[in-house]
Amino acid sequence: MKLFAGLDVSSFDIKVCLLNGEGDKLRTFTVSNDLPGATELRNSILECVKGQKVDTLKIGLESTSVYSFHPSMFFHNDESLKALGTQVFVMNPKQIKNFKKSYSDMDKTDEIDAFVIADYLRFGRANMSVVKESQYIALQQLTRSRYQLVHQVTKEKQHFLQHLSFKCNTFQEEVDSSVFGNAMMELFFEKFSLEELSQMPLEDLAAFLQEKGKNRFGDPECVARSIQKAVRSSYRLDKVVEDSIDLILGTTIEVIRTLQKQIKEIDKAIKRIMAGLTETLETIPGIGPVFSAGIIAEIGQIERFDDETKIAKYAGLYWRKNQSGRFTAEDTSLSRNGNQYLRYYLVEAANSVRRQVPEYQEYYAKKYKEVPKHQHKRALVLTARKLVRLVDALLRNHQVYTSKRSVNE
Image 1: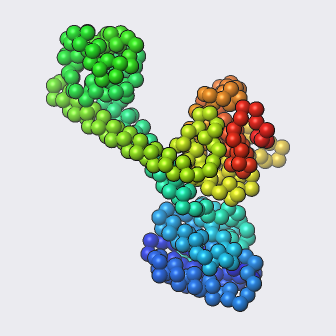
Image 2: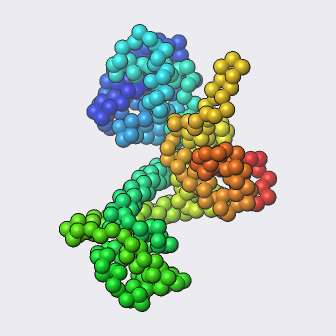
Image 3: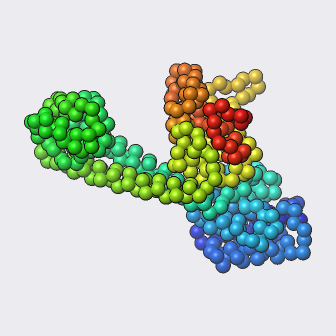
């Protein structure tokens, strides 16, 4: 017997459609989206297959954030379903929406959506089961939260730079030092006025920078001199406007530091979990526990993917073909589909690896020179695509990285 269960999940209930191998509806019903409801659904599935030999039992639902998380994990981990060889699939809603277009005369209801999901499974469209062992779930929550925090930091830094230009419009042009270093951040946190900075003795400003920068400046007086030059050449603001800008800069600095502190705490938790996993990605120069955790958390068990091309497609690191007759477009855009988190960690890891591994550095440089625009972005994505082959080989073969690899990339 073949059984396909399509689940349309919302915050409060689950619409269910059970199909057999011929596409006949065996049952349609609704349960609550909670533990009793999932248990009822499990029992209904077991009742349908009672006394029969089960060849295929697939349960599918769309990825709807936290709404689909608990049901998918319940069915994935249920021992009675495991004994039947049950596979659970969490699918991209876009895939289901596109598949549904083949049913041109079909209405839009939750019950019908459950049928479409079950039929999608029946046609064998879903070929990657849900991932999810506890350590992968924990890693995924941490690495995705880190991703969000990193993007918040970027947004706050942009906000800071915008208001820094109001306070001292030539600062970034004149000062050859990171605006976001501890010394510079302290300088603006102290809310010195432009007049105070311009009239401060050079040695005092240099000493302030050296103290706050923990003696990391090679020539603090040179940096202090460039700051005073920027201050003296910048426009002056009314006192009330400057005070407002100082307040915004100060609060933004506090937000950035808070976010950075949270990222450090998450990094510590990631390292603790990674210490209990057997993996070899960290043997690649440039990939530490954070990048490897982000990649592993999204890939999960490597056996979910037939080969490295499936991983690349899952991450959205592929270009669609545009062909008609004898015409084939040479300039096509990168896919907008895929797992944004896996794509982010692969691209960031590739950027780090290419700085330390000559082979990847040369590959990046080659791809950089091939086009006149979007050079860095294109070359980096292609380098990430190359890295996917290495990641797949190391995880699939349980090998460590060596500069003279025997694995097939």
